[in-house]
Length: 348
Image (cartoon, rainbow, N blue to C red; front, side, top):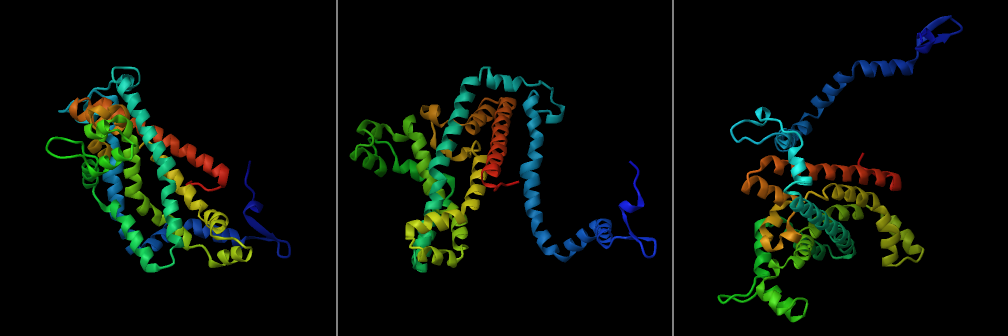
């Protein structure tokens, strides 16, 4: 189809001359000087863009450059040769994981990873919202600040300190010393038997998931409530006044004012949480688990650690992590699609 002058120019019937449409002229000028405007914007706000440099470097060195090592999943590992010069082996490492010699341990680790993350989503995700609602009901600023600091503190403890504290509280009994204070308390109220408490709760696979979730809530519920509390205090006071005029009490205000106002924040945080559903940090599990609890505690990250470091099967370890991350990516896409169709709120 041929282009005509009337497609781009405006015809003046009085003069019989074609002139350029002012709106089209503005669009052409913007398009022509697009990169010049971009450079002017960067030059105007160069301080803000300079602050982005450390973050960009972090993502380059710790997120993008390590992707090069994913090629090791498809090659025969050789400690001498770089990844690019190693021999290609195809999907052999993935076959070992899915149907080969490591399939039993891999599927068990994948199941444990999903269950630990799913329980954390069910029990750990609502807790910061509840904590933020409680903070919002505290009228004394001094008391609220004190409570917030106390709930934030566990997040700033290192994983080693936190797991050491949990180990001491759940310490098994011995000739040298008695049981941990939490083990004694659980045994006295009948939640666990004296034999289990004395032999060590951390050595019992039935209790590992509960310990992991409780410690996770204690560690992160207060700190994660910052986002929700910020969304709550941004709600207009007129909304509360209108609800009070209609006779709404505290619980009704939470239900009809607070929760609908922070729904978009909750959905965004839920999508990001689902995205990390299979990305359990191996440090906490590695410091808490032991061979007796592998059946419920071993996750993909710890399995990859043992395969790569202890067994020196780097290609299989890399393949396990790659499969774990691919499944996590698919979960993000699925959760984002469902959220966009259900509530018109999504990440992209």
